[in-house]
Amino acid sequence: MAETLPALSEGEKQCLRLVAQGFNSKEIARQLRVSEHTVDQRVRTSLRKFGVPSRKEAARLFVSVDQRSPQSDTYQPLIYQPEPLASGPEPASSLGQPDKPDEETERPTLLRRILAFGPPLGGSTNELSIDGRILAMIRAAVLTGVGVVALLLLIRGAFTVLG
Image (tube, rainbow, N blue to C red; front, side, top):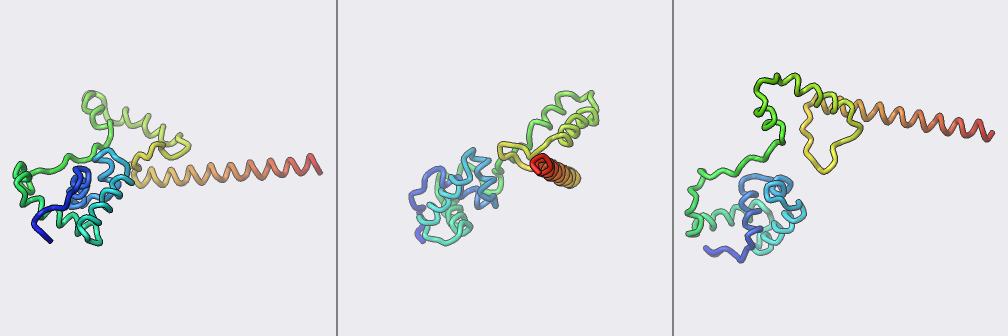
């Protein structure tokens, strides 16, 4: 391969840099605030431009050529690190109220999780602990069982009224 990059868009370059750092498409989509489909499309286009079969190979080639280019001298390799993904608003709210114990703020959250009837909407990540996941599965099984029993009783009642 030549010492120059094929004509890549800025989005394709961003995606390849993150692929080289080991991120998957979902994580890249979150960081760049685009859809996972957009990330996959950019990576596929890059694969075609580089003429390589795998995203890792394209990322490796891009990073090796990109580091030799004069524009990449802005940052020294291995010093610049991307910002970690934000975990949510909970850490900031707990820092704002240092005099409140954590137990008081956790109780309503735990109660809300127990009383919740379904998974979170909007594609948010599952941040439940193992115990929380097991509790969610038990809750789903119990609700499903109650629904099946109610449906069977409704059908039985309809047959006794009609029969």
